Image (cartoon, rainbow, N blue to C red):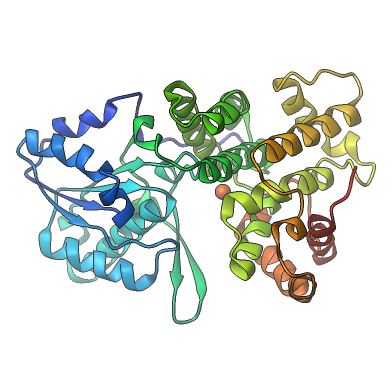
Length: 387
Ligand SMILES: [Fe+2]
């Protein structure tokens, strides 16, 4: 069975932020963070709203790894103001917070009203980084700051109705974040390409995302003002998001979530460091099972101009290209080089491996994994190894 859903209207290109002028509404609510306000990015949207005489209220309290408390504050904000649209302007954290606000708003109303009376505000996502693909997924991760646990939410009500992909809003993203988020895009694409839900429809988006990301990430990193490279990365991020929202992800993300929770490694950087080690396992390269698992990786290698009759050469070259990308963008090869204390790391491995095994992303990994496999990956990603 091939299953594929795309329900978000996509508007892409330089200057497309002007789209908000066409909204047939009287009042909207903006969810964002203080950085977006300070950088003037929120102004770029509100000037168009004002030009169309659309009133707006700004909720700018979203922090990195948004908490349940913040979501509650935002919820009160929109319940009081009753906007016809909710516009999220920011990176993954802002869009995730806006999703959770919409989710709890609808759930709260469902307990009070007849379901037919509930009108969901139009949800518009305007990403300002190119990485998470959150603008086209129905997933949000919120942190419970009391218990320090992540609360993953998945519900169709959280899927943005419209995503505006205007890369002119990403020009001020610092180099390190361009690198981390860009490698997150590549990890999404690689994982979605081999995930259990991958099919010809998801592959179409993932292959285009791979082409765009491998051809433009280094250009966007070298020159943040390269508008063309920025737009290509913005589109690639969205396409990879469409891919993984349908196909699923894999253990790269499970391991990254676990180490992010334990040592605060940024999501994209953790993915980037882990990717070579995960490909070595998932492709069958390190345990001589290439014939069984290596084919999609060899196909991916050929998309980025690695041509060989030998599947092992293809997969090794793919891993090497990813390592070179990391190296050229200052991303270390191991978590030891990243600076994590050895004793603390090895002590945490059993718990991190267990968390990774229980992670939802593990269910769509192309190969079945055990605790032992995940522990080995954490060990390799600390000490480094060649394949
Ligand atoms: Fe990711």
